[in-house]
Length: 313
Image (tube, rainbow, N blue to C red; front, side, top):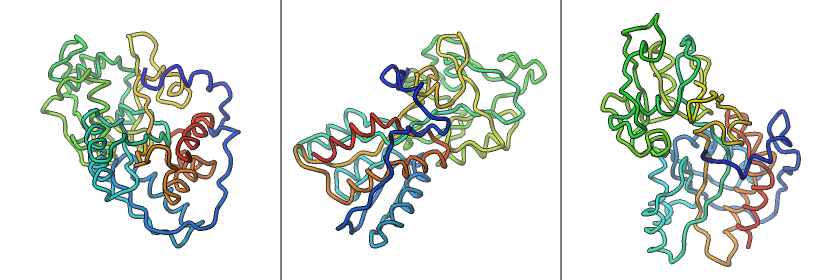
């Protein structure tokens, strides 16, 4: 359970569109200008671009540059000051936080901006009903820390019509936060098989699976296309749970996660105005509509309000 119980109570109040009714529209303010640089996650690349476009409609004099080569590029950019925004699809590692603190004397600030169900995608014509997390580990890991047997062909997963057909594995490269998150939560920090076809971007994983009937691959739910389907997953070998909004909030879907933007905020000082207004826009109704448009799930208002309060003081 990655997001877990703190969100469970919020499921019932969620609207059909999934945007919390209490989430307010963005209100423009005066005096917003300058350059905003974002360096980090590929999984958030489309979202950051769409948010930037929406923000610039309100503040046409703001210049926003976005680079999305992987979550591991965000901490160095924040440490060196080459970016104000560090989007990541995983939390920072202890050593990344330590390196930031060594340079600045305080820790970076984590801003949760959206919810993702990290999906295990299969080809749209693949009939498999679901996978346990132990099976996912057995498919992708050479060390199989969850104790399962090696899985390499579809007959081992009960698809007798495909017996003997090798399972083609797609995944991300090691610069990716999705790679790190999947390794930690699906492989119990074990090693990936050398046969995984590592891709530089999330969309490339989904394209690979969509073009190969016998493939599976992991990627953010926002990259889902008509050529693939997200396989339901089970934590303990019980019920399978779809990669949807309600199951992500409750923690029943085992690979739910927050998408994050890290910022450099000095203690007891408000975040710089440009970055603060951008994040206010992101967490507003306008920004969360963009989250849904991009295929991810919006933040509950209660959590967004808490976050914005900490950024402004």
